[in-house]
Length: 312
Image (cartoon, rainbow, N blue to C red; front, side):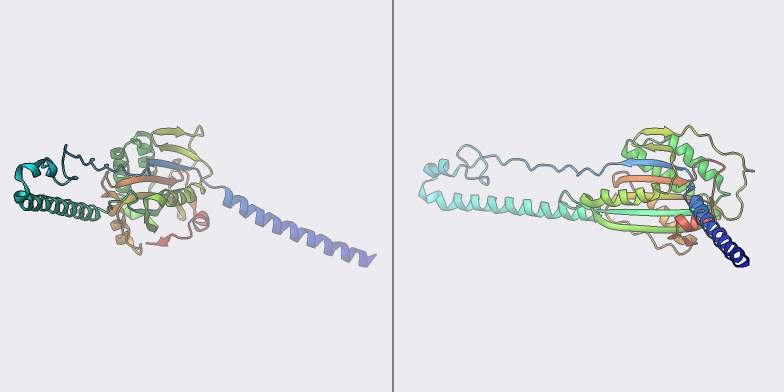
């Protein structure tokens, strides 16, 4: 009987320990999965740029190819006779060579001008896709209010509106330097044909961290969650509570953002993104979490969801 009691107590202890392990593991998993809602603003298009078709070369009646224009060699031959053949042929040859040189030089000039602005003469120009992410102390609650306001008023259906969205978003982040804690940059140089895939990869990775998108304005489609904001707290961010804002931008040409090592690098990166012109901007998305005023991310959530961020 005593031996049976000992075995029963040992079995009971094992079951209790196993239950404790399951409770801790699944309790942490539930906590990690309890992600906050997020906001999303943006738009853009990755359609191939329009190319101007070359004007068709016209052939004058009786003309000599495309070089003679109105000088018809067979038409002039009877007039000038064989004695004038050398002179008119030389003139036509000179006009043809001059026309070729003008076209060639013009093509080179256009190609050089395009390269200065990051374009090429092809329909698949170079494109930069960059992600800048900032982790702020939860005391920067006015950032949530700024982004919520921008989301409800931004014109995300035009290139000018998207450029304004980029400027306002970077300005909003630049106004909170005292609350910057973490930051990171991810950027790639690619071509237009593959830029959309890279852009979607970066945005989907961030959107997947939200439990839901509680406020969204993408390509002029505004959506709001019916769930009300959690205002049960005291309205003051506690140590270890954070807000994360992410900018994902696709633009023609090269954008070389600095590697973020301190706050000065972050300031330069934000200023550089905010200065992108509307005719260079292809697409942009601004994402932030939590979106609802009164909610914040804990330090454990930051470590779990944003391990790439570095201290600034």
